[in-house]
Amino acid sequence: MNKESSVIGAERLLLVLSALASHGKAMSVKDMLGATGLAQSTLYRQVALLKRWGFVSEDSGYYAPGPISLQLALGFDVNSMLVEASRDSMLQLSRATQESVGLIVAVNDQVICLEMIESTHSLRCSFEKGRAVPLRAGASAKSLLAFMADKTRAETLERQFADDPAARAALEAELDAIRARGYAVSDSEIDIGVWGVSAPVFRRPTRGNSGASASITLMAPSSRAAGREQQLADWTVRTANAISTQLQSN
Image: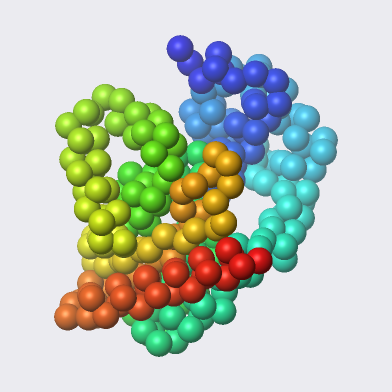
């Protein structure tokens, strides 16, 4: 079954927007066909509508998010309660450790960076704001998976590892250990030479949403993290707990 047969109506518009948002640069029609799985005629209809409303712009046959999408992004930066509640504590953690600190969320089986405080070191590691990677490897992804609501995690792993039950079983065992420890650690899983530690952030539980809302992730060159791993992990966990307390008191 192709992707088009599983989405209807407005979801096709959202599929195109999601592809443009996650690609990181302008896309050709061929790029969008591959990313969305839509038929070419369907894709052209969706793009024409999005262009008319200003959500997509075109230049020499390449497409990118348009000015209305930029307005949405600016509105998110100004109004996001999660980002606002996290920024001061992230700054404190970055200054204390002299390393980069990110606020990471899970969306549509991807890990997305909402906010990033850069290290002041000339050699530094960071996760570009807005960058997305698959929700399966690295400290951020594993922290988010480990502290998801059980049903959501099971559904996510089923999609990610439908053809590899052995890899899924291995990851589930690792996630159990992360939940027991309270944080996730990785070294060179996403980018070679990058060490990371990630701890979950929780809002006040609501019906159907008892899992982590986000993760705070500290990133450093593996060489600079060596010998400091536990200290960096402890600071990151304290920061995530402080943000959780603030969110739950609002």
